[in-house]
Image 1 (cartoon, rainbow, N blue to C red):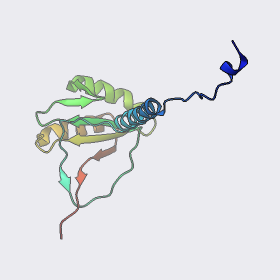
Image 2 (tube, rainbow, N blue to C red):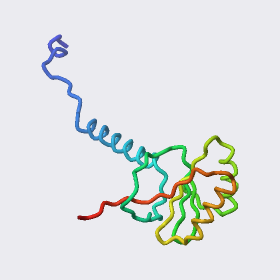
Image 3 (spheres, one colour):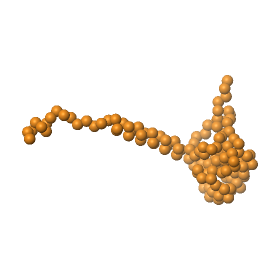
Image 4 (cartoon, one colour):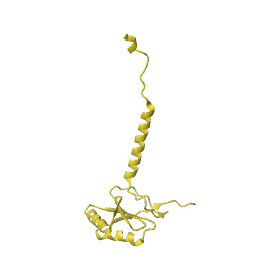
Length: 139
């Protein structure tokens, strides 16, 4: 073979379309994974709406208790009994400055929300917050 065969003008091109597709898929994956990780939500809990109040910064150290409309307690995406919640709060109370965020459904029984508040107070946790969804009033 002659030397000219190896020195041809044909260039090697990298196909960019599959590379761009993979980059976009990775970006979407990380956006979705980050969004689900940042805030603990129970999709079955519809928060009460309010027009007054302040937006609070998301705090990763807050212990979140979700109360569904049926009275089911959900912590860290797991349904728990009142006894299991009591044990979790007992453990949490040993930490320095524990914070509990209570997310009650709009149809949840007031007594269920008060049970969680009383359990927190019984274990010496006074830093509580009730979460609402803030909506803007229409003029």
